[in-house]
Amino acid sequence: MQLKRPGEDTYAVAICDSGNLWLALWVKRSAKPEYFVFHPTIDGRNPHSSLHKDGTFHMKSDDQKMLIRKLQPPGSIRGAEHLGAYVGFGPKSVGAVCDPAEFTGVFEAPSGVLGPRNGHVTVDLIEPGSAAEPLFHPLVEVDRRLFTDTSPNLLIRIFRSWSQPVNGTPIAAR
Image (cartoon, rainbow, N blue to C red; front, side, top):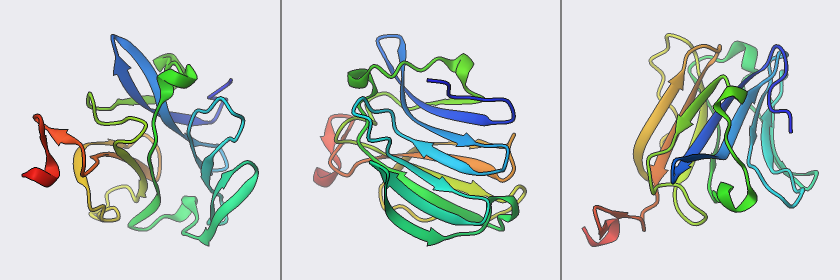
């Protein structure tokens, strides 16, 4: 699988397990510019989201579009534009090794947050120099990374699920 081609930038969200990095999700900015958010799978479904240069956004799996809407074109983002919230991470089970050399940037998720039933990752595009806030997410944000080497800037945030324990205590019990 070739993740990066000339003129493209790719950004990984990785999970560290026993010293190995596993690819949970990645974002690609093509030269056009267009943005794609991918989940690794072994079943050929190819679930992904894309924001095309005309502002058309869709989520797709099995070559079927699940959601289609118009957003700001990536070449002229003002403020912030939300590209989705993603769940269900099992990169080790699908053999998705993360090689940092294949990516422009790697965001390592905090330990124990992302899993098959736990954790969320959101992806937003932010106008450079803007004070715009990304779309509100009701869960507990545990980490974020703003990649400023691309325009618009790419903001990836990681959230803990409500049912996940914090320091051994379930959030609902606190």
